[in-house]
Image 1 (cartoon, rainbow, N blue to C red):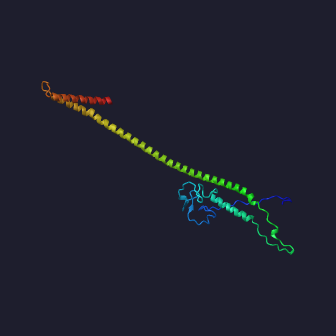
Image 2: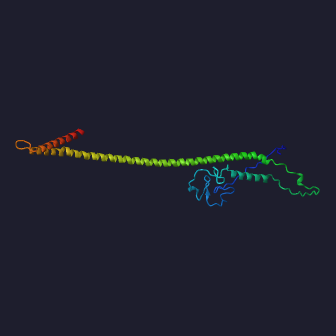
Length: 258
């Protein structure tokens, strides 16, 4: 009653908070109370001495029900059942009337009897059930968002790792291209040196060695004649003439290609 006006009120009972250990993902205790030696990954539900050094499979597996969600997700049926049982216990402890001791009044003619005052039927559970359902749905949606954000984080980490590896591969390919370019320059230099050396050899043959051979063949042709100018050895003459023609063709061919 406020200012002589009666208002209907409903007692509010906040939803039961489920304790989930951040070390082993167990239900009903804190990290300080945990007796496990290894830490449990909330995603893959595997226990490791050091979570920072383990390679997570990134596939959510619940530790309690083996479902495809995180071990601390409120949509887990095991956690939901534990939460409902805990809430039921809180409601039952809140709705049970406490025994009222007999009133030892100075008036000996009056004796209080609790049976004369039966408790009113409680509607708290009925009033709180829709609210509890809405709160459970809201908490479930929040946990779904957390799971989605965790999945996005894993995908981002994988993409970032891929980009780092791609950058390293691009640097390696760039170094290989530079090496091939340097080898190509060296090959061009070697080819130019071989071409110059070959040109020197060809000049030696065409300008010095072939003229000497022509002179030798001419001298041998003169020696193959007698005093009257007749040929002594016709076969030798034919061969010498053929050699001279070949030398001239070789020299003319060299000039033609140049």
